[in-house]
Length: 428
Ligand code: NAP
Ligand code: HSE
Image (cartoon, rainbow, N blue to C red; front, side, top):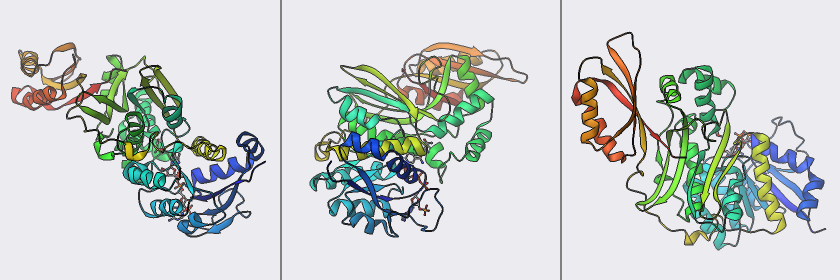
């Protein structure tokens, strides 16, 4: 059997400890499958004395992850600290400069610095792998870069933040308010240290950035993602959308259109009966559409010790087997600067508003929509105890610009109370 592949692991939190456990528990299986043993030689974290539930005494300890990355007895630097900058980026660059391959789960670092890190790694002849950075245990990076390499991808979309999906499904199934569902997710330890990364859609947008680069050969550009979180979703919208046959999901969509590359992460309505509509709790789902394969749906755990470490090990095993794929599926310097689409593609929209319950109110709203070029598909008015009537409208496909024109004009009718809610209905 060949020489062992020697890992240096920086970061011994949820994911790092999960990787240590797999390397130890599955040593024989990994050696058989990879044709060589996988061994950990050195580890690093902030607090050396912390009880992490695993015996780290067989491994050398480094306080400084950069020193770990440069160790001569490390072949692969496994970065599991997190953070877009700071030690994660410094140690990744140090590892590449020292001739090591790198495996990371760090979507924040890659979404912001992935382009330059990939170019640096490829210029140095090193691989940089990140299966665990997108959708946890779902092997979506491998699916896109390898399994679907023969397809022109037309769209990639999905639910990629388990915390948001948990909050939205708890609001739906248990009738919780947003605040109560958020508190429940917090109590279960689901939220990132900065919860805005989850509920603001940033974490999911990091992941979509990486998928868009691979799927469309576009330069890695986090700023190209139009971003909106779930903080304004109310239990009322969840219920009303349900009445119309939809679920609300924080949905990421990337597609190349005639107007440029469209990438958005926002709360959308999807049919309740669709696979995305039926996705419950903290689970992730990625839907990929290719010209030859058609549509495929990948579903699984998007986070947690076992699933995320499983994805890290997939990258480690590829390196052990000598499989070397360009970071984003093609050499990073060939990724093109796809101009971001100037506007989102046309869609049907869900509109919810409170109308003064008096003669002619609905007609005024219909006139505003009609003058903006928006056609109504369905409409429903609910019973109401007070003077204002809750009204739901589902539009036919319209351009977002037309909708914005109508939304700006609605207050001028004098019959619309407060700001209407407008959510995109995604064709899935
Ligand atoms: P975590 O539990 O917070 O662990 C982070 C680890 O990094 C800790 O062991 C910490 O040391 C160490 N660390 C932080 N700063 C360091 C520094 N300056 N020098 C040395 N070590 C340092 O994080 P995690 O959940 O395992 O996540 C790790 C990475 O995986 C992140 O990029 C995250 O986005 C990504 N990821 C996580 C999940 C998940 O389910 N958790 C899923 C997908 C991707 P101490 O323990 O001593 O404080
Ligand atoms: N905060 C992320 C989520 C963790 O909720 O999906 C995995 O990236």
